[in-house]
Image (spheres, rainbow, N blue to C red):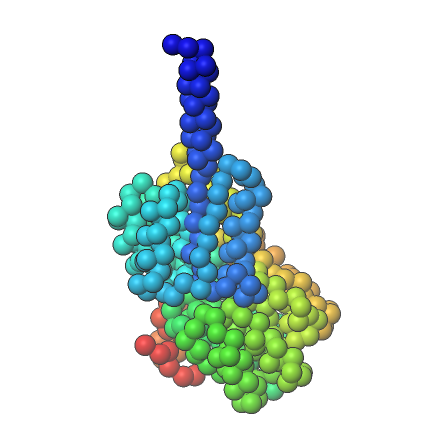
Length: 357
């Protein structure tokens, strides 16, 4: 064989090896229900994606699709990600649960992580945050600061995650203000600025001077700012552009450490199917800066409540508590177990109105 032929063959072999090495990145996909610029839920999930890139550099490749409707369209997006070589796919909304399970069954070598759901498989993990812990702190501040005694709450969908949050906020508002009343508007969307703004305006027209939200845009903040003298809380992200008023604090979802850890587990071969449900203590739920619009004593009480939840000395669902229909829920000193919380489909005593089907 001529020397030139040998050199060419060696070069080809080196090129193929280099190409294989270049393709040996861990590919991580993200399916987002809203736009990455929503300022709330999807924004924070995307921050987690960026943290994966920052942590692992050229050892990973991340891809994402935003504004993916829950249902069949999400199944199509997940399938395409798997076909395109994703090793790990995070599906980041409750309504992606069944599509995630369906697609995972077709791609047993791909790892899937589903946010806020409860169905698992050998290659499907679930993860969520204990948002209700942050709602307890918001409820305390809201109950202390309302002057009209009417607190508005914008719900997305009537699923346990959202119902838990409403109950937790109400329990803690009622503890510090027995006269407080909750008015709830269901928007039936995670992200729709127009609908969210309309919901906030309806609640404000009904006398609410505090508005909480379990939807993802900043539209309720803008509506409250326009109305004046209405207090709000950032949802999922800090929404600090509306501080110090109307946004007086926030719940921040910090997914970055989880996303980094689960990506590393895929990379080093230690990934297993697990269920993760962390809160303030583990850092998955953060409490945004409590602004000076909140009286100093109320701020101190809120921070003490945060500390007691974080260290486990206090549970937001501690009896005595009754259900809306007057039946017993928790005895004095009893705390709710995770199974009850995960399937919560009832209001606590004192909340008026029905939970929609």
